[in-house]
Amino acid sequence: MHRVWAEIDTAAVRHNLGAIRQRVGDTRVMGVLKANAYGHGAVEMAKLLTGEGIDAIGVGDSGEALELRDAGITTPILIVGGIIPGEMPRVVANDIEVNLHTVQMAEDLNAEAGKQNRTVRVHLKVDTGMGRLGMQPFEAVPFLHNLRRLRNLELVGLCTHFSLPYERNPAFTTRQIEHFNLAVEVAERLGYDNLILHSSSSLAVFGRDDAYFNMVRTGIGLWGLLPGDLQGWESKLKPALQLKSRILFLKDVPEGTPIGYSRTYYTPAPTRIATIPIGYNDGYRTSLSNRAEVLVRGVRCPVVGRVSMDYTTIDVGIVPDAEVGDEITLFGRDGDGRITLDEIAHWADAIPYEILCGLGRRVARVYM
Ligand SMILES: Cc1ncc(COP(=O)(O)O)c(C=O)c1O
Image 1 (cartoon, rainbow, N blue to C red):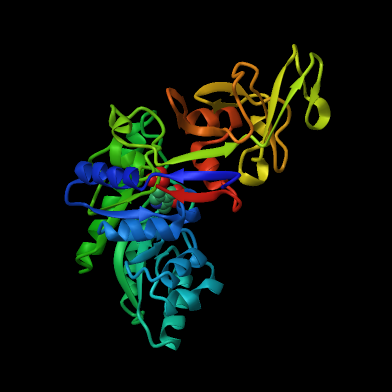
Image 2: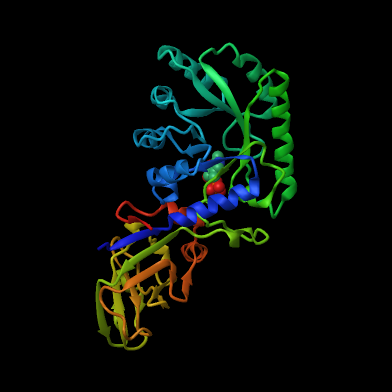
């Protein structure tokens, strides 16, 4: 009944969580569900993961956090990046945890929490080499010293983020870990105990076992779409999402037929062109034009002509029995055929994360 849909295998997500737990042992696991759970549907994935006893949830901003609270999710939720002052009232009111990066931010959040007569659970974010958010390890010393004055903030965690890819420079990640350890030592010496310490995202979960501390933050690993070659760990995960559409229109065309906007493709021989109702509005990018392949009845067929907002054209000349209504796999499996997310990302000149996060609103999410 759908024109374009993402088929999401919930058993695969459970399997991947199991593989992550097997890898990290007793370490707590945060499921990172920002960007609509990387296109998988944040509310559905939060319900699934909380049902599996996930320890915490990570989101990108207060809107994403509230969506989950409104859906009845009571698990601790952390905004894994930063917040702007305008987000503070709703963060405080809805029991959302945040990272602190500056003294000013701590003061402002404390004032808002005081106004609402509440306490906010906060994590201190330390920049150990990512260069994006967080304070330098040496700044953490006076900061932590003064934090006790802010009576409406409760420090519950300390975190950092790796820039990776560690395969190319493991020493850099090692240095990040060392710098993070300095901040951890300071916190402990100042009497902060039982802190949640977290640094590893999925690549580090599978690539380094010396950086788990007592919680890992994993997104892409839960979806089974770990990029790279991690000594076979990636093959233990199961991709959870497949992108599908169906043939809306078919026509036989002679040699020399122009296809699509700007006539970027002319058929080199008589063939059959199928039009499928997925376009860049759905996240199937124009950079895939004349580059990508899709599966029709398990057979790879090329995308020809330019991808438009709502439609993509493919050459199905090598699948003579293709019919209107046939299911098309943009990525995922069909019979013996398989198109991986890495392939799509490569064709699109993007990273796999971008393709998932770019899936549009019109793409129906179908849970299996
Ligand atoms: C701070 C932070 N932690 C964890 C993650 C999860 O990363 P991954 O999806 O690679 O596991 C992200 C994602 O971008 C992040 O920004």
